[in-house]
Length: 141
Ligand SMILES: [Fe+2]
Ligand SMILES: [Fe+2]
Image (cartoon, rainbow, N blue to C red; front, side, top):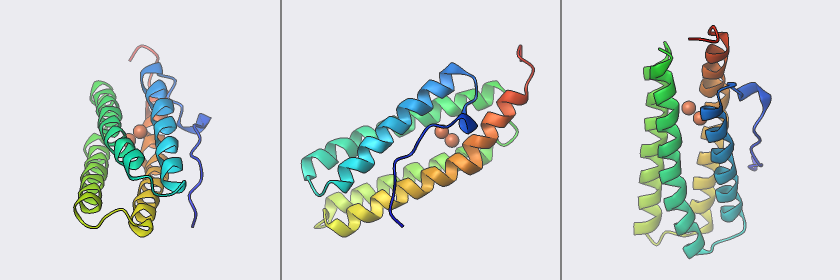
């Protein structure tokens, strides 16, 4: 399966600017990273994007987790675990790429595939549920 661009859709819109803005920015960075990997192996460029993407992922997840705690989201722990899994896996893959003979077409493709599939799945299963929960709350809650 080839990876495509990810789009921000109304389905995942929470109506809360703090999280919607963060999602839009995250998707933009994610797409930039995916496109960089697709263009071929420019080690410096990919290295740069990897660092940036990794730290931006952490930032995005933290803002989402803050929102979940603030709104007493019942599936907080489960959702947080998924974020942790992603961060750990991304770190491991990045290390592997950097310490081994690394930058081959295959492992860049594998990394790209993992990020894309995880994110699409996470959006549909977890971020979407969170958005529905937030929308179901009374306005002043
Ligand atoms: Fe999430
Ligand atoms: Fe998210």
